[in-house]
Image (cartoon, rainbow, N blue to C red; front, side, top):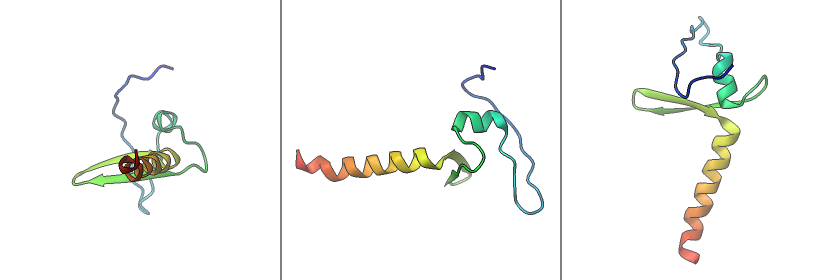
Length: 71
């Protein structure tokens, strides 16, 4: 199934604070059972990203910033 570039999906928060990440969202994030996600909170908005991808991108940005003055 081909998903649109942007879509809205709702999920219910259970009594213990758990939610099920819908399959379409897991597919977009590239996470499966046992995978991890990171919640990025910015004022009243929250982004959910694949933790491994986020960590790699953050490390690459930090390395680039450190190396900018050494060209």
